[in-house]
Image (tube, rainbow, N blue to C red; front, top):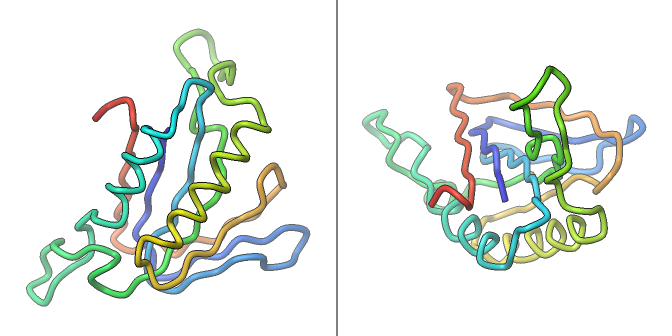
Length: 149
């Protein structure tokens, strides 16, 4: 699994002009699921993301987690994170999980993240054409890949 994590002041996701999820300060998480991903891959991200110390403390150092600041999270499925760009100029998505498997992993990830202690967890709609508005803070963007532990 891959997660692209952005520290945000706010973020929201819309489908067909309707806002379906939004947060204030916290993390925007784009989540990609590969065909070979397992529950262990999910566990790694579920443990790592809430504990990432990427928010500033009183001295301006990135020393606080989303849990420490009472922040929120917006989780959006993003199969293009699974792109293979080694050959040619057109990305291949052959390693991305099949939709049914990916959706199940995505939904379980959301439910488990809700139990992590993050004050609010919002999400997009799997497989939908979504518009995402992100007010990136910093900017701070971190890529986590469960295969690169």
